[in-house]
Length: 224
Image (cartoon, rainbow, N blue to C red; front, side, top):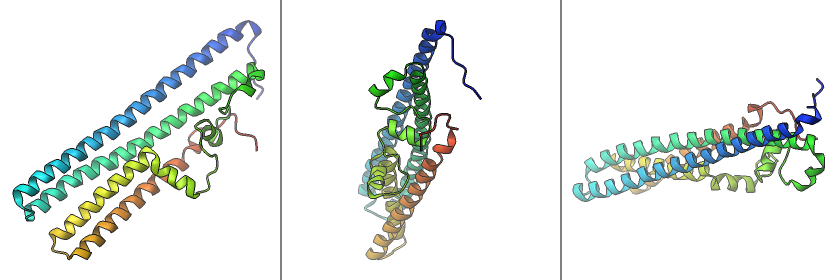
């Protein structure tokens, strides 16, 4: 299908419309960042409050069976909140990806009208996954390497997922201690809870990332 070019008289209007939409997407990305940080702060506040409450319960109950029951219940609530927060962060990252794709399309529109300006841009004008990753300053490769694995842990979902997995390990360890398990059993239960939770969170995050590309049909893909 042949692309229709606007008449010369409407070139300035077209650029104004593109620029307005560009600023709209940029404002939406700012709102996404604010919600992401708000979600993280909310979870950390709940976690801090639960730890302080458990310290008071432990002092009052002297680590009796009541302490283990209260601790497991409270940490389970914290764990649920953490899982929901990680899930929401993945959804927000997907929304942010869509905004970047939209901005890349608009940038392609700028280059269609003024191709001489392309040499001054460091961001991409392609709206596929490779172009979006280049705009965000990430490597376009999808192959898992040591660098990409560590990068996953420094993102908000990765960092928060590690904390949530530590809570899962604490729940498993406390449950084992409450059932009278020996010290090595408590350590093994905690390590198993941490590993299972972290593995599930990483698997879910990887699946979410793999769906970024097919989420939007590219119109201006990166040249092979």
